Each structure stands twice: as C-alpha cells, then as structure tokens.
Image (tube, rainbow, N blue to C red):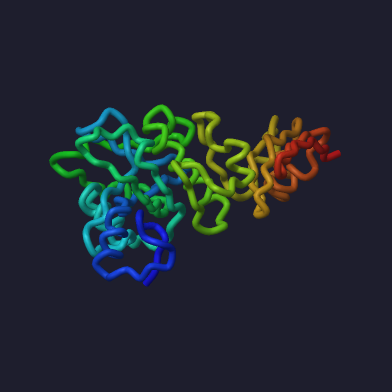
Length: 273
C-alpha cells in the first residue's frame, strides 16, 4: 500500500495498515440523509424542529455500519411514523467543513449527504404521519419557491437541486455545497424558484355541456427532453372541442400563441401559427 499524502515520506513509501488507517480516519466526513417528499400538487414536505430556527427535510445522521438508504427509511419511521421503502437517490452532496457555520466545539469535518426520493404522498399516506413527542414540532407542504425562505441557504439549494433531478429523471446528481457539478437546463433556468399561482384547477375527463364556452386554455409543460414551454394560451374555444381533442391538441393549434423553449444557454421564442 503506497501513498504520497503523508508529510515527511517520499512518494511510493510503503505504509503500514495502521498508518494508512490513521490517515484515512483523519480525513473522515460525517454521513447524512434527507428524504424529499411531495404531495400531488408538487409541494415539498418540510419539518419544523425544536432545535433550530430553519426547517428541514426529513432525514438525519447515518449510524455506524448503517447504509444511507436504511438510515433514510429509519428516519422516516422515527420522525414521521411512516414505514416506506427508500431506494432511489436523487443527489449526493459534498458539504465543506467551513460552509455551514457550525460552532468550533462541534468539530464538524464536512459531510456527505444523500438525498433520497420519498415519492409523492397522497392524502391517505399523509394521514398516517405521527410526529414524535419531541424534536419535530410540526410539518407542512410548501411550494418549492418557498424553500429558500424556510430552509438554510445550503439546505434550500440541495433540496431544489434534488427536486430538479427528480424532474429530469436522469439519475443521481453530484452536488458540492448544494450546487450541481454539471448543471442541467433546469438548474441554469432556476426552475422551481418562481412562485406559481396558489389555485389548482382539477381536470375533468370527458365531454362538457354543449354550449359551455371556454375563454382560455393554458398549461405549463415539461417535455421528456427537458425542454420547458411557457404558458400557452388560446382565445375562446368550444368546450365540446376541448372534450373531444384534449388540451394538448389545443396547445398545438393555439393561434398566435408563444412558446418559450430553454435549450442550453439560449432562449428562443417560436410561434405555433
């Protein structure tokens, strides 16, 4: 076993197992987990805790000889009272020792934090949540755009990066202090950091009353190739046509509508005439 990292030793010096173990232990980092959970509206579950002013995602420290995935599942039981399989990692974040402002007495060496996908929870699963008697004082589902106001700056960056990775469906992303090493178009466009309307319109499949007019059709669209389309709208149309052809057809046929596509660093406007 050789190394060139030990002061006073020449490159290629053979190290004993004890010396090598001591060197690696001196460079050890903490390991932690977070679990990103959303509701059907895309809002993110955050926890209010009794030991800090900012909110947190569910999660915590990885115990000795425990895998990050098992730690994430354990934390869900301990903090939310919910048993769930946690098997998809959205992001792995390297957190520098001097980036958190941790007190010196804590001797924070830096951390590797895994963000797992907790999935989308419906009302039944949310109703199963049981908070512990201490530590977690409450939970709420919040819009992604509110995360920078509720979480610490680093935690908010990490959560938004993980949420974009979930949308991209391109595999686990590598972060440094919450920022992706290889930003995607969603990261460069700061997607999810802009507040959206607070109302939610349900979609009713099937025909509508014959003479009911639709005054506007609009949608936000994410295509599989991660192209982002802005709000596309059309003037008055027949609800019968709406029920027959569906909203995507109307988006394609929208007269004089604008679609904004974000591709790499360029922003171009195209028309759907």
